[in-house]
Image (cartoon, rainbow over all chains, first blue to last red; front, side, top):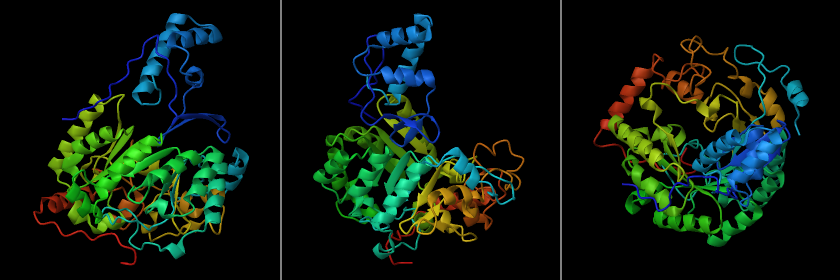
Length: 99
Length: 384
């Protein structure tokens, strides 16, 4: 029976995610696109994904991040917020975002 | 930077085994086997039998040049491995150089010969991640597999120092008949150590592991049980611990997509500078590989005969040629195909569509059902 002393983080509008020290976003000059470097993994998020990650500074809440993106992309807040929430949960589940 | 124009130029005459023109993209990762020296003697080691001595190894300047060339070529992650990479006295310089290039550095270590200060220093120089091997979570079994007294206690201490240094930690548990029943305990070990990730990987039978196959092969039932345990743990530990799993291909239906395809994403540099599409490729004795002492990496990656040999799909014979999975698993592993059929182009016998599959599966069944497996032949430099 496996016993975990830590628990899974569930994100909500007040979560203030930040990239852990061991996850880095970098512009890859050879391929001319952004890449996320993580332990023995690489990720190639799309433009929106990179925009979300760029705003995850540990200060802004997911609600604030969604509001910024809704303004940037001139899109309805509710739709953007749901996308941001889903994205943040997925990245938290892979231990790529600290909530 | 090796841009697209330069890559295209180098690929102009690139031909695979079937004579098709092939055009590779830039590589993502590099495995740097800095040395074959190692304090442990694990019988499942995938290093070649003819292990290199310290005097055969590349000089500091060679490795620094290789790292510069790899970064230029587009490599994003470099795995510092071996043998035991920390036996190189110039490791600090390597970590520093990779950090200067923004390349993600991963130290793959046995963790028995390092101090808390050393790992702290490497973290300060920009090391990004540590992968620690654990052979067993039972003291006597760990001593027996590694042929090193007290290995487990040292690894436990080392894992603590990695976390204290603020570095992310992966536990690497290579499983076989002697420890596969510890799978759950390995996962618990990773959790207790504060690791972010564990790899539960069944032994791949190359190098020393091939010699020790009869002493290592797990049974079918054991493998099924392990798959259940890992699957349940993956569900339970979502968001807590990342679990990567490599099942035994001897009992598989389809082969592993070996290396993500031959010379597709990654390559390996051996302690004496041989450049290989995978760490076991020198077992393909029907071909020759190139060396970083003689040729720049970009030329080897894009233009060498060895790297281009199995690129594309036109080289595949049947049953791969007409198979809808040929772009999924690339016909499996060339080294395993060569070792078991004598033909490096053949379908990997791990595939149920291979005419050799049944022989492979029954061999695994026979070996694993023996109640008296042979003693380990420990990995030692100079034995072959």
